[in-house]
Structures are given as structure tokens and as C-alpha cells.
Image (cartoon, rainbow, N blue to C red; front, top):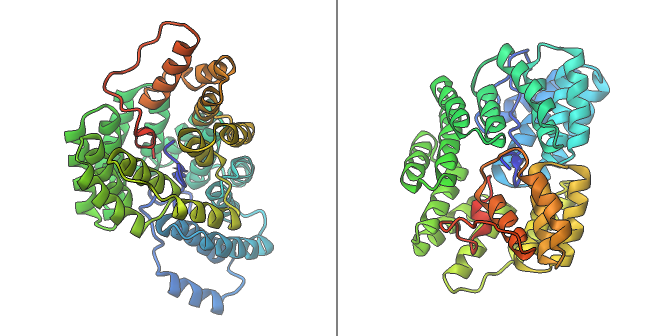
Length: 399
């Protein structure tokens, strides 16, 4: 899923740094580093230790650094800054929004939605708060609530952050053209290099999952032209190379990716390409990174469930997937549970969750493949896309 989110990442987590804490948000991630350098903000807080918005801004910067660097220790720093801000002004909308962003970064989406809802109540004109609320509700499976938050964002500040979220909402409904159109709006609105890189990367992702590798490569290259440090676009190039059959180039690119940003998603992708190339993957770094994330308070049962189902222990995958779906009953979690159950030999129960994962018309090739495999196992007619490569499942997951 496109959040932090997926990893974080989304990943999904489509959480943006709130540079000014005004009613208007800064741009979508990872576009916005704060207006002042991190050191300058820290120095200012030494002079003005009761500046609650400064502490909230620092917390958001640390959340952004955790996403950009893959270093989960920044979440611990963010927690300290957010706690200080909350101690000074617990009901301020900027403080609540920063705390919500931190919760989302740690995959605590129910808490993120609660805090973002409080921020919206405190300041209904805060597009930043509506953005975090939209992300959290998406992860909780409340697509209607997320759509309302996105619509409000579009009313308040129809810019990059709102357009990107509107694009993802359209994609989850199966509206590929709408998703592309909103990203094109975002591209027209973007001017910061990191904003341009971010939007171009997701235009590449749309093309990749439509099977248009040439267009995907073009967008990834343009993203890196805008911001050579934007690692997700480099990962996109690696995916396109792997799916196009150039495994040597893909492995070279993945090595650069994981050296820069050793997120679990990228490490799994690298390992799958190694398997495809006839090499033996080493999951040591993946296991270590998962432990580091857990120690920093980042819960990621979703990635663990997907990995265990595809590469290790389906029974363990079911446990992870049930835990994830219980907390965050979204489309991706439903698919993860369906696939884990299928791999564990429970196709009848699996089908129930596969149907939930495909209920909105989301045109995700991996989710369609999983449902088709489950239906075939139950003796039902189902078409498997002949162009889909089941040996590289993590490459088909949205980042």
C-alpha cells in the first residue's frame, strides 16, 4: 500500500513534514524538509524552550528523517520532542498533528486517527491535520472517511499533498485514469525538486503496475533528475529492470538502494531477485532491520506476514496477518491474511478475505493473482494474468 507506508511507508506512510504549521500543509512526502535546517531549529529551541510549535516541528522533522534514512532511532527522538510539545500545549492543532504523524510512522493508525481527529476539531482549517487523518483512515480500512478527509484537503489547499492522496483514493476504487489525472495535477503544482521526484516516482509506479515498463522507467529517471537522492525512484528502476528480465542490472540497483535505505520492503525485493537469478538470498539484514524497527516502537506485522507467507513459515504468517488485520482492516491486510491462510492450507477461509481485498475494484495485479489462486484451489473458474510473474511477489506490491 502506498503509505509508509509500505513499508513505512508509506509508508505509506504519505505523511508530510509540517514546516510552518499553518492551515496550509507543506507538500507531500518526502518533499518537505523544514524551512530551517534541523540544527538551526534546535538552536532556536534552546533560546525559546517553551515554543510548543517549534517542538512539534522538530518532532515532525525527526519522523521525516526516520523515513528518509531508514534509521528507526529517529522515532525515539521524535517521541521526546512530541512529548515536550504536548506538555506545553496539549490541545494545539499543530502539536496534535505532529503526534498523529509520529503515531502513523509507527503504524499506530488508530491512535493517529484519534489525534488527527482532535487536531481537526481544534482547527478545522488545518489541511495538514486532514492529510494525516486521511492516511490513518485509509490504513484502518475506512475508505469513505479517508475520502471525506481528502475532499476537505482539496477544498482547503488543492496542492501536491492533496492531489497525491486523491490519486491514491481513486486507485483504491479501481479508477486508474482518475489516479493518473490527480498525479498529473500534482505534477503541475510541484516545483520543489523533492516534490517533483515524489510525484514522478508515483507516476512511474502507476505505469509499472499497468505493465508499461518503458513509461515507468522514464518517470523514474525523471524523478532522479529532479532529486538524485530520492531512493524510491532508484528502487523503481530496480523493479523495472527485474520485471523486464535484466536481473544483473536489477541486482546492481538494489545494492545501491539497500545501501542507502535498508527498509524491509527493499531487502525482500532484493532477496527475491537474487532467488530469480539463481542466487541464495541472505535475510540476515532483513531480520536485523525488523528488530530495530520493533525496538523503536514500529509495528510492522504486515511486512512480516507477507514475507513469511512467501518465503518461510505460512503458519507464522497467519499469526502476523491476523494481528495486522485486527488492528488495520484495510485492503492490503485482507490480502495478506488471505494469502497466508491459503499458503497454510486453508483456502475456504482465505477466500473470504480475498473477496474483501478485491471488493473496491482495486486493480492490483498481486491481489488479483492471490484471489485467482485461492479460487482455483476451491475448484472455481479463475483467470490468472499470464503476464504476472509470481516469483517476484514483493515487486508487485505498491510502495
